[in-house]
Amino acid sequence: MSAVAGSVPASGGDPLAEAVALTRRLKLPHIRRHLVELVPTARAQRWDHAELVRVLLAEEAAGRDATNLHTRRQRAGFPAGKTLHDWDAAASCIPRPTQDAHISLEWVARRENVCICGPSGTGKSHFCETLGQAAVEAGMTVAWFTIEDLGALVRRHRADDSITRALARLIRTDLIIVDDIVLLPVSPDAAEGFYRLVDAAYERRSLAVSSNLHPSGFDEIMPKTLATATVDRLHHAYIVVTDGDSYRLAQATSGKGVTALN
Image 1: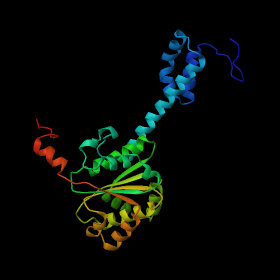
Image 2: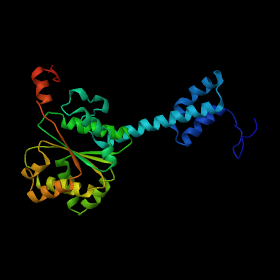
Image 3: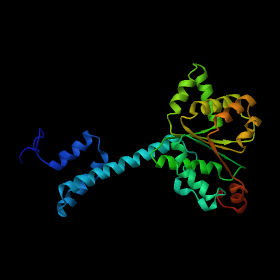
């Protein structure tokens, strides 16, 4: 066999084995996975060479997309592991147009915020996770925190005064979710961490916040000065209010979602 055009030498033996070796060298794992199967198929079905190349490259692209999606999900730190497809729009108390508008993520592109507030068990965290899953499926990066996680972040970086650098790294994330701000007062570190995050992300990144309290009531659980400054910087926020009975309570009283002990 003559040499291929350019500086590529002719195969010295088994071209398919050499191609597999090249996929390892070039870090093309998904092409390697399909190469041995597709080459005989292409030969038997008399594919055009360009079609074989196209299919192999498409397999590599699809494999990389799936790997990147998995990585973004893992890094986001979602608590329940639910996907976008686990969301039951019909069962939610949030009006369907409101759901659709937020799941479209246009507000993230505009670097705006959303605050989801209402009683416990009415789907706030689940909707936040739905928004986060929609974002990772759209190729965005997401970070999930509770407000006490932010307090731990402040404490971890207080010794060397590196919290500003830590927040600068964090707000490279496209969407940051702060979940489950409840009715009880938060620790001083958590209040500081929440304010610092909101301040650092202001008009630069989008936040989704879920809370039992409307933002106007944040001064009930943190110092008034911090609460006022935090809410002031959340003014680019859509308020989504949930209501009704607790889904978790309804499941518990009906026996659904409960695993019996053996």
